Image (cartoon, rainbow, N blue to C red; front, side, top):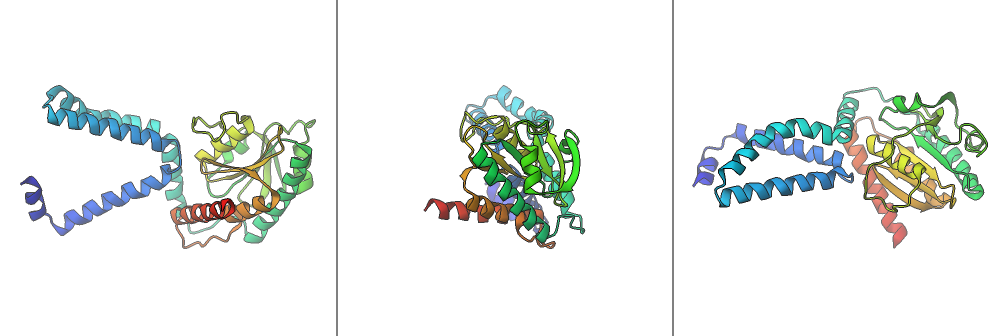
Length: 285
C-alpha cells in the first residue's frame, strides 16, 4: 500500500531528484571499480543490509536504533576509508573544469614511448631493475619532490644510466611529467596496501608501481631485477610478462593516444580501459 501511495504522489521533480542521485552513485562507481575499495564497500553493504533485515523481521528495536545512528558514523568513516578514491574523484572533477589541456603533444608522447621501450629492452636483457612513471593528468608533484630534480629530455641512454645498479639514482622511480620531460629520479612512491596482488611474492618495485597507480592515473613501467620481466601498472592493476612489442602497444593505448578535449576525464578513462581489455583478450586468444 505504501508503494502505491508513493507512486501516486510521485511528481516530475521527484523523478529528476531520483535520477540525479542515481547518476551520482553510478559515476562514483567508476572511481572505485577495479580497486581494493570494491571488496570493502561490498562487505559494508552486506553487513548493513543483513542487520536491517534482521532488525525488521524480529522487530529488534535496539539494533534498529543502532542502524539509524550509524549514518552519522559513516559520514566520518567513509572519507577516511575511501580517501584514495575520493581524492581521485575530486581530481577528475577539477580537471573536467579546465579548458586548457596541459598534456604533452602526441608527437612528444610518441617519442617518450619509443625511448622508454628502447631502455626497457636493454634493462630487461641486463636484468637491471627499473621503475618509470609516465604522468598523465593526476598531479605527481609531491612524489617528484622526493627525488632528485632533472628536468631533462627523455632518452634511452639517460634511463639506462639512471638505473645502472652502481649509480646513486637507481633505487627509486624516474618520473616523466605532463610535458614529456624527465622531471626527477630516485623518487619515493607509496606501496600498495592491497592483499589481492597477482603474485604475493612481488617485490618493492612492483608494489610501488601498483601503489602509485592506485592514487593517480599514471602509467608505470617496471623491469624486474630478478627475472628481467617487463610489466605495466595502471589503475591498480598489473599487466605482467610483456615483450617489447606488447609493451609498445599497451603504452600507445594508455599513454600515447590523442585525447579529445571535449571528452570528459571519465569517458577517457573508460575508453582506455575498454581498449586495454580488448587487447588483452586478443592476446590470450
